[in-house]
Image 1 (cartoon, rainbow, N blue to C red):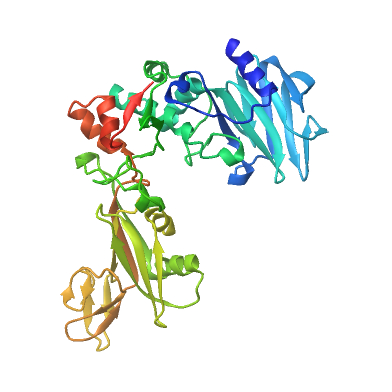
Image 2: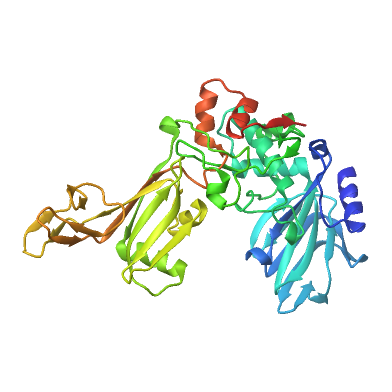
Length: 414
C-alpha cells in the first residue's frame, strides 16, 4: 500500500516523466510502460479495468468516481468512461491488482494507470516500481529454463533497458512489445521473482552511466556493431565480439523467387527500373551492411544498414549469403538439359552472389528463378546473445562475467 500511495502522490503532482539520474537511483525509481501507444500503431479502442476492490478515478485532478470496474472507449475524437464523455488525462489508482483488457487481450497488472485519447485511439500507460517491472518482464524475455547465472544476467539487462527511455516522446520509458521488452503483467514464477530480488538495483553501466542495453537469441558467431546495425557511431560497449556458439548457434535458410527478392528491393527504393542483380557488401563481423542494386537501365542504387537490410526480406538476421539457383532442371537455348543440383556461374558450377543469369562454359545463358538466403544468428545480433551466454555459462562464467564479455568495458553497479 505504501508503494501505491507513493505512485498516486507522484501522479497527482503531475510528474509525467521518469528521470534516472544515476545508477543508484534504480532501487527507488518507477517505470512508465506504454501498454497502448497510438504513435506506435498499438493504440486501443477499448480498455476495461477490473479489480476486487474499488479504485479511485481522477480526471484533470478531480476525482470523478470510485468503482471496481470501468470501461473506456475511443469513438472518433471522443473518449468515454462507462458511456460518459471525458476529456484530458484520466488517472486510475488501484488498491490491489487490476485485470486490464485492451481490445479483449487481458492481463493482470500492479501499479497505477494513465489513460488519454490520441489519434482516435486510447493511450494507456502503466506506472509501477522498477523492481516489479523487472520480475514481470522476466517470464516473457528469458523464461524459466535457463541456468541461474544466465537468468541473473537477464534480470540486470531487463532493469537497464528503461534507462534509455526509448519512448520518451510518448511520455513513457518503454513500450510493452519486443520493440523494447515484452511485458504482460505481474510475474507468478517464484524462482524468477527470487532471482530478480537477488539482483535488485543492479544495472549495466559504462563510464558511470546506464548503457543502451540490447540482447537477442543468437549472434551467429559474432555480434554486430551498433553502428553497422542502425547507423551512426558504434557505441564503445557495443563493438563486435567473436564467440563460437557451437551447437547453440541458430542457423536458418529462406527461399524466395527472383521476383519476390527483386520486388522487395524496388518497392523499398521506390523506383520503376527493372533490377538486374544485387551485390551484398559485408562488414568485418560478417553482417551484410550494404546492398548494391544494379538496374537494367544502367542505374545503380544502394541500401545500407544491417537492420534495414534484414527487414527488407524479413530475415532472421543480417548475417547471410544470397545465392541464385536453378529449379530441378532447365532447358538451355540449344535444347540441352542442365541439372540444377549445383549453382552456376560463368566458370561452371559455383555460387553466384549477384546475378540470376548464369552462363555455362559453352556460353549459353540460363536464368535462375530462385534465390536462396542462408544465414546464422537470430535478431539484430547487437550486444548480448543467449546462445553465446549458454556457451559461456557452460565454461563456468558467472552473470557478471557473461555481461561484461558481451558489453565491452562495462561495469555492473547498484
